[in-house]
Image (cartoon, rainbow, N blue to C red; front, side, top):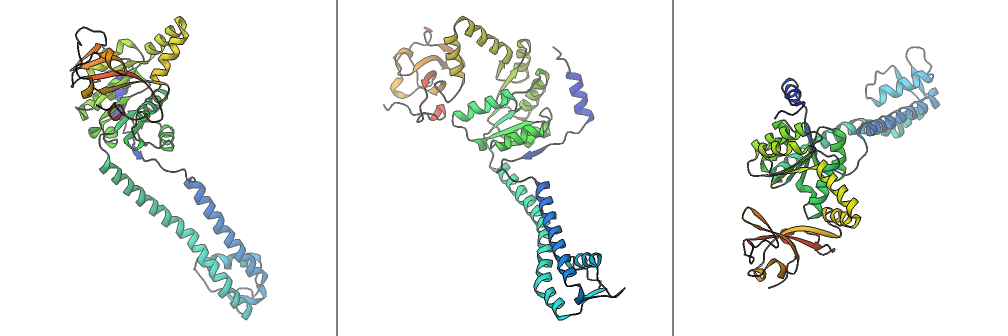
Length: 365
């Protein structure tokens, strides 16, 4: 099956080099251009103040060209003095002018240099610090979650996995839009700007060391290419992808996705259920919103539950995972629970139980 636009994407990947870079989350700071403008304004203010000080005491200065110092000469003298050029064509000759140079203009010169040089030093320091943070981030990133696409689907997916206890430091967002990555950084997530269909971009996200990959792109053909690339880089990661059209779901699975969610069909089923029973629709919506109300979670069977039937477990069991099979709670093949089974249960979320399913507090034996 050939998806529309697949050839165009392939040609674009061959013909163009996509720029990509990593952006780590950081506190909100002033925009760099605004910082530079502010410092230049401060330097200009120092220059103007110095010029007016010289002009006010112009009788104590001598100009080698015409002997007198006007306003233009005052600005000229302030400029060459603060920049430490010092041509010597305008010089202080009176004691008052020389004292003013010592106690007023010299401190202003130092302040002027600090403002200009400090901007450069801060930029270099910031770059060095950012490189250090980036290298440290790469060296410590393990078993993380990569989310491709920071649109509505991607944001919702991140919100759900974080509600189960995943730390924000363990999430990396990949998106071609710089605005999307900026928004992710503001929310506390590391981001990579670039086309996720390219292996270099996914390598920047350390996808080969990721535990799970969520693909929430806007186009189905892009989702296929991203899945193929991600599976090639990481054979063991769990890949979950979203598609718009249900007919493309088998292609995603053939490309290496472990699970495929058809967003349009899922939304349509929820709409239909809400029409038939608004209350049932509300319950389903509550179940898929992790961290509030009712949650559907997966957890291991504990020793106290071994030998019991799913109906005898304290939690409301929906399904039993046995090996690679998902069995209904009332399936005769389940019989009694085994220690190697895992349970899909519905639980009431409270502030004390909003943690990852694997470490959720379980009844004591």
